[in-house]
Length: 352
Image (cartoon, rainbow, N blue to C red):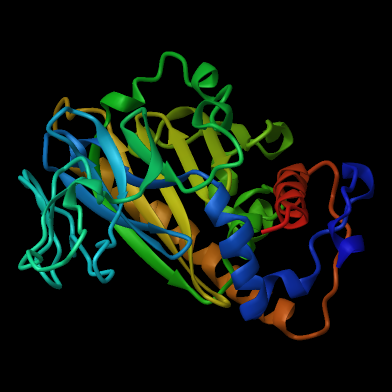
């Protein structure tokens, strides 16, 4: 195990061995050593615009409740009542005045402080004023909301340099359009591995390959993120010409930016060998009839996604077969995968 986790230079690097992608022990390692320490995309800022607006989420098994307070502050409260662990919210909502546990009715303010505990008058030395919900960290960025339990880096450190690359693109002014989920029979890391390289594009994405310039497909890596970018040439009825930008933000957020379009993905482990990938589409405010163009974008993205899913499912079978150990990475085409694997090795070396 320790040999598998030693840092590897790109020109000598191998992929992570198969046992990191298979079984309950691997899933628990990821929960404890990766997801408790990274920033995750949980909501859109427009869902949390006004006091009492709230969104439920979860990080590493901890239920969270993102809520805008009466003071305008956005908080990521633990959605776990301090009485006997009941939920304060079962779904997203707007304009709540207080947070009431669905189990026994204990009531909290939007800042997480206990306001009332039903029928607790006979409890000796019980001080309601000392009870409050724990909080995770939260950050708003370009119309998106991230949260973290015990992050290895600050949020500005995590997204450092992305803002500079996006200068001039008013993504925070884009409007949410549609959400999709894909449940996939593969480990979450398998899916991200596939996302992080264009090496496979000529082989399983013929339609996408015709749009991108494989010869000028470039990968750049930062401390906590990587960027793949390529010139883009497509029909004006789809994206037109410009640049395709594909960001990975540690540990499981993906940002896909095309001309007049942004798509966010979150890759969520569900169980050993199972993950869910969420897709949210954003566009500039409509300046005319563009619904047909949006529909073409969704259809094309779905085509590419299903091509990826088919391959990831087959790769997961190979990883679980006992046949595969760890293949050498292509230094020219798989430096994004290498960057991700080095972050994983670093996380796994850190005691959890």
